[in-house]
Amino acid sequence: MRFFWTFFWTFLLVQMVTYVVSSMIGVSYDFKTGSILGVALTILIFVVSSIIPAGPAEKESLH
Image (cartoon, rainbow, N blue to C red; front, top):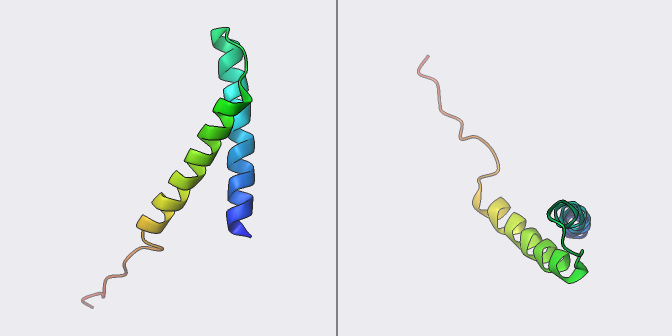
């Protein structure tokens, strides 16, 4: 379920950013570009989250 929600929110936020940026630079909004970027960013999020360790490494104290 976390994969679905990650994809959903990433896709939605990338579409909004694509719309705003295209409006700011004066070009037409392209849904296909936002979709490709949304899928690519979702894959990047999954790859980065699998590389980063789950938590801090606890060091044993010397006391």
